[in-house]
Length: 274
Image (cartoon, rainbow, N blue to C red; front, side, top):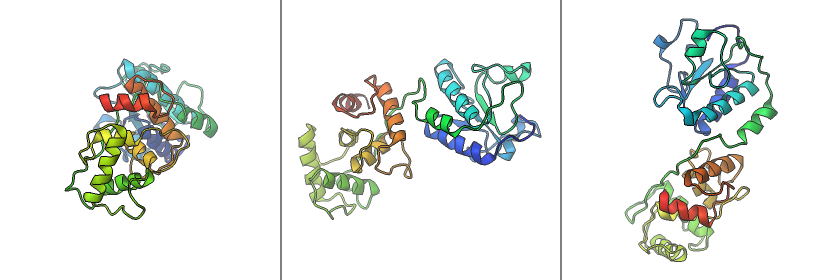
């Protein structure tokens, strides 16, 4: 899209980062995989970092993604961004309308033929605090820790968790999966009903996240955040609003009550299905 600038690239970039954090795929933007200039007219916002396409390309935007893209379009509108997605509202220009059924286009220009969006941070934050409609989140399997695993950040995280639950002494998180750590792991496995191998698999990690709910803090939260797909910078050990959103998405994937609490039913299903 082209036209007069309505808002800043910085606001668009903030929006795109938030969408990625909520599981939306971003394309055709310099900071999100680059721009294929041959797909756009010379005056397009895309090469200048003022536009992006969301959930574009295979599998495109099938029926199951439509609710999520409508949510993303509403988020863009709350920031005063120009959002074009034909399942949300159909553009008056046929060429534009027909080319935006399979993805959401967002840019910093004026909206053509639509009521102008206005910058409303409160409305935007409220939308971000709601789970993405129809979106589910598959858990990430964390690294398996074997006796040979040494000087590894995941070992240190596991050791700090064992300290937190009283199975290691403070100061024993040395990053080495040695005999003391393995013995503590076996004790933890006994505690949660797993085979006592001393090896930390996805089952041990999943159990370690058990009981986490919004407002909690600690290494078990850090583990839960990793399972929920938070990046290194997002794993702060505090179960805040984004934790609440992602945990509900995980629970919907599991088919259990989406209450953001990683209780016994959620963990049991996670161990079986994850």
